[in-house]
Length: 111
Length: 109
Image 1 (cartoon, rainbow over the protein chains, first blue to last red):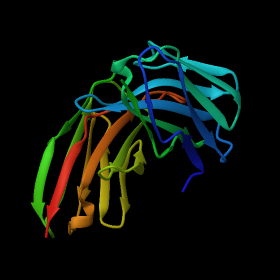
Image 2 (cartoon, chains in turn brown, yellow):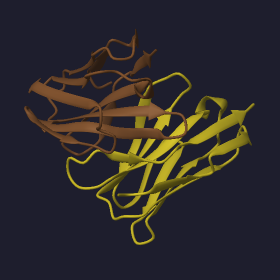
Image 3 (cartoon, rainbow over the protein chains, first blue to last red):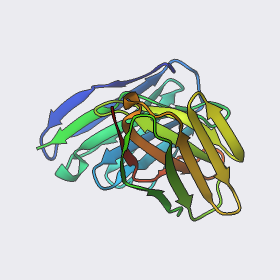
């Protein structure tokens, strides 16, 4: 299995609070992605990174920001969490061939 | 924006049956991915293909670039194949994936 972890794995937070999710890889891959998975919508791309300090928006980026200061870490921040951001969040990394490896997911509940 | 459609949404079959899941997309791509997700579980990459056909054990994936269509086949299906199968289209280089909504497969003993 690709070395990719996410933390926390579960989190419950209140509306309006900031939340940061962490994705950590040990594979030294250049590309990293944040997706969310929701019933009825499936998986959707939030943000992605193609190198340290190089990031771009995905399909559903509103309300989210990201940072990548080191190759191994990709952080997703909800500046002020809303109930619509209750979801399961998956991080993924891609090797040089483009094959993607997914982390175990973080279940976030915003009350 | 690529639109990715999968069919069927749900499929129940008997052990041993040959299974086909279809995926179509609207815009040209660099690669098509097939993923598997077990209930409450993580997501595993099964195939990434840009042309032709790939085979891993009992799983076969094909793609027709001209028709913008891909299929995932499972031969001699088994209850452990029960999972959600998701196809996803990748545009250029570093682009993230655009996903279909998944096919929920149940294989009954």
